[in-house]
Length: 221
Image (cartoon, rainbow, N blue to C red; front, side):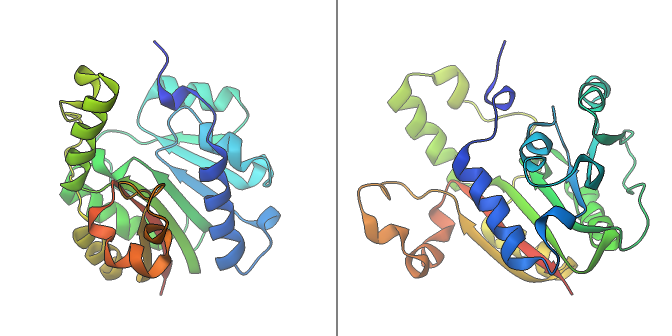
């Protein structure tokens, strides 16, 4: 059965990711060496390959079948064995580490050690780009989507694999401890399409705890 993760990355998300890289990396996008931490089926690697050579794109994944699937596409991907909380790369190896909808699936204690590992493999001033659900506001959006779409089975019950339920405040604190500078924002605030003032950056920052998902980046000290 097809899932949203089987489809290509949307244009809006693509533009956000590339704009973060362009505006915050000291080198040109085509020269950026990037790790997709939790690469899934490789959909983000394929998107990134539009502006970056495959030789600069790496991935890690815990699912053997997905690792094989990504490898068949020609990307450099490694399997992270269960219980292993270190990354098989040298210090200061990457310009960017990217992770979308992954850290909520990692136990809190291991997740914090992975943050330190990501910091280790990043170059000085390197970027960690991250996206994850915003708890507990995420559950309100689930109920809203269930009532609006009728997909009660899909939205009404929370994903049982979400074992690390981070809020804006908790993620921001963890990232500041591990990296330094942090810039996070909500991807969507209810009714922002109708109430245009909600799209202003200053307003969004004040109301960020009400957003459905956390998106942003931090810079290695």
